[in-house]
Image (cartoon, rainbow over all chains, first blue to last red):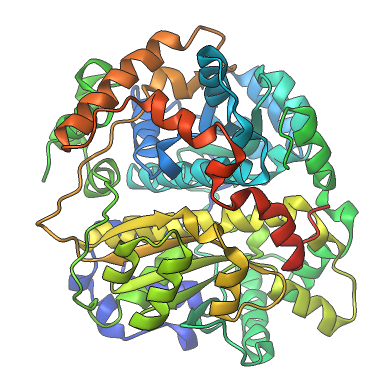
Length: 278
Length: 278
């Protein structure tokens, strides 16, 4: 069992561990908290197949997550066949870890079941035409997927999300045979971490920047961002990466529409796939 | 420790437990899986304050969740003051459990930090104007919030999401002092469950309807939905609720725009709050 205070120091930097250290005493920490706090995204997988039944257990964890009004507006396509997985990897920014991982889950906003029920009953389904309902499906899918991340890590597996599944979503939809009212939201690669390429706990912004008490804070955030920049530069150095600050990477990512790598077309693509987004 | 097979029977109905039962033998289950599988939403809270440091520990779990490109596009406002919490309860469909719970977390899509960084650097932030970036923030927030649900349950606390925080989001934004580029996504009530009003594991659709292998399934779903309808009617009966089928409740919820309770205006409200959603 890892020392929780060590995990928190890795997460926030030694100077920014939040709250009272006594909460992080080993006897105050349970295996669930330890799993959550120790999260790291894995991008180097061994190719071993997962033990039989793992997929079903992960999906049971996913479906145990809350669902808005119990409408269950998500579905998953699981990919294990190497060739289809490789084609999807190519569509998703050509990321090789998708080919490596024995399991890739494509998480879908799925309003088609509700559409089907309404058609079968001969009633309207106006609610499905609104942006809020798409958003509800996205939230449902994200809650479910995060349960899979936690479940997988408890089993010694590693995961990484793939937002690039939205770079070319209509091609992904064709590859997966998605009907109207179903849209690929993000991917999740799952497999046994390759110990030769270990992942590290990524530092985050201090709680002072993210958690606001009673009202949204109005205190200046520059010094908090400056010290986070230094923390990230040091983290990158420790990973043998160029010591870029957070601010630099972030500005590259948001400066132009073209940095979205096709995702600036999401709205039009959702309409094509049957989401009116009123 | 609960019997995991019992939890799966409650989740799917005895006839639809997925995969091989051997995966659910007590020795194959760890405390993390048990926590995830045993989830139930709590709507009856005791008013006891949470132990000191709990909030910081929950937020550390939240920030340990993955974040797209590490952009960390969410924030949280924590509400503990009874009067403000009561006003927010009124805005969020007047749900009394928000008043009861000692802690209410308002989860926010927050692009204002990135906007601030870009302004300070004197560069554009075109990427923030797109629907995909709002969606990214919503997914970031949902992954983080779900870690809080899991962490809270491991500490013996209960939670329930509040999608109705989007019923009157601009009023919520005023109450919480949200600046432009920050939007209330959903709430989460947290507290000690009131044993006098226990919550139950809610049955879900069978995996055959939600999990698709390699490609989205084309087999008819009517018989699966019919048996789920029976399962939900039985569940409602066991809770001393009217024995409504899933289909009925679902159709009520999606039939008309007015059933969205104001959320049909989400798009316009996001624009007012500074999200262009290009």
